[in-house]
Amino acid sequence: MPSAKELATLAENADEEPGADPRLRLLGAYVAQSLRPAAGAWERCAGTPEAEQLFQAFLGREAVEGQRPLLVVRPWLGGLAVRAGLDEAPESRPARAKGLFFLRTGPEPPGPNSLRGAVVCGDLPAAPLEHLAALFSEVVIPVLANEKNRLDWPHMVCQDVRRHAHTLQCDLLVILEQVKGKTLLPLPIGSEKMEFVDFQSETDLDSIDKSVIYAIESAVVRWSHQVQVVLKKESSQPLLENPTPKVELEFWKSRYEDLEYIYNQLRTIKVRGMAGLLDKLQSSYFPAFKAMFSDVEAALTEAQDIHVHLVPLHCHLETLESVEFPEVKSRLQPLLHVVCLIWATCKCYRSPGRLTVLLQEICNLLIQQASNYLSPEDLLRSEIEESQRKLRVVSDTLSFFKQVFQDRRENLHTYFKENQEVKEWDFQSSLVFVRLDGFLERLHVVEDLLKTALDLHKLGKLEFSGIRGNALSQQAQQLFEEFQEMYGVFSEASYDCLDPQSTEFEKDVTEFNQRVEDLDRRLGTIFIQAFDDTPGLEHAFKVCRSVAGATLVLSTLILIRGWMSNPAYED
Image (cartoon, rainbow, N blue to C red):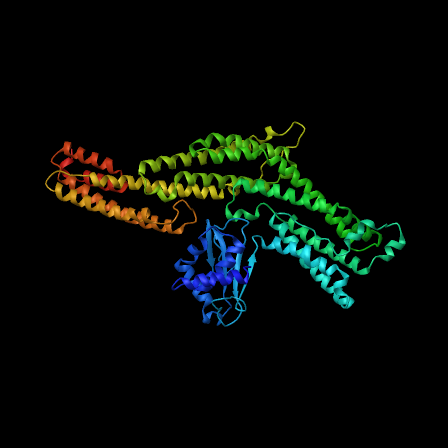
């Protein structure tokens, strides 16, 4: 914190500037000493309109009428940022950068020369949990462990305070490890003596405090709950978020590392000493400990085996994500080849449920790559021919993936050794392709839409000759303008037209098709009138060529009906 002399100097400097609030310079002195920002950073930060409103609300007399106001200053983008609370930290805050807080303590606003008595200031660590855990481990626990600090405390109070402090410390350490993806099994109070206990000596066993035994048994119960949470995790849990295969690989890697971390903790001298004590005392919690250890050991073996077999998939997935989508097709067969090898060689992964999850995630990856290639926001705004070409590439690639899957499924026996029992893929293909099929169906809807739009775009160039040629051409032009208005709905929409869950797009397509049917009928009427005006067969064929350009089924049917009923063309 700045000294009284420094604050006084700042206040004098602030008084020299007309209209300047000296209290801002006092706040700036704390910021400068704590955060050490670049020269002029505080002045630029405090001069923004947003910061001025926050400072006015913080320093005013009415600031403490409700909840006590809090200001937080953090480094941000080479300067400083001021926020009105802890939850409103800048999104681009540099990692591992501490902040500073100011908190009003009373109704009286701070004076121009000092903030004491009105504002409390303190540092906000960059990693609050690590900071709190270190505070407990290095300050609180040693202070409570020192008998000189609790000479006048009753014995029960000492035990209760130490127990609560130890519990809080354990909770903090468990949370810190959870952030890293690891499961910490906190040791109970008294476990540090377990490695020195001789379990063959009756004297040592009798000397152990009953509270220590109770703490060990309670720890076994807590560990069992923690281990069960880890064991019950399945890679299929995030499927609702449409994950890619990398999530599957990362799941088994982290599961293997976490179980290995738990296993190593259970193999330490202290934990083995605790287990030996429970065994000697014939505690009812010893069988639970043995069962937990066996479950961890079996799960670790399984996770390690699966992780080792899934690693070869990583390079194929990296390639699939890095190449352009038209090049994906040639990479699909090698990818499924590796999947078949995993099925044949990894007994732990030879489960329909687990393989279905992996194949669904591969489908999710293909859908993701296809969407990026098609660019849904531009698909209905770009040139129609180019969009159609891209749609054909995507449809062909995804259909080829389904064909390769079926081919590998039929030849799965070739991946097993002669003396090995063949395990077929006895699950339904629809379970694998449920989302891919929905995506392909949406592609067909978009493709039909583009085909209709391409046909109707030719209305703008449609011209008729004859007596009523000019009037018919104007009617066709009017239909073209109506079509442009109808199709403009899709180019202006904000939804993802490739998302099978988008009901707005389906609604717009249904309405568009209904209006297109009406345009078809009106266009057919125009063509019939054009045929009626034709003086001979040569002119009739010219109209037919115009119809061929339109390629609208209903219009053609109406046209043929009108032509066949015209007496001028009877034999």
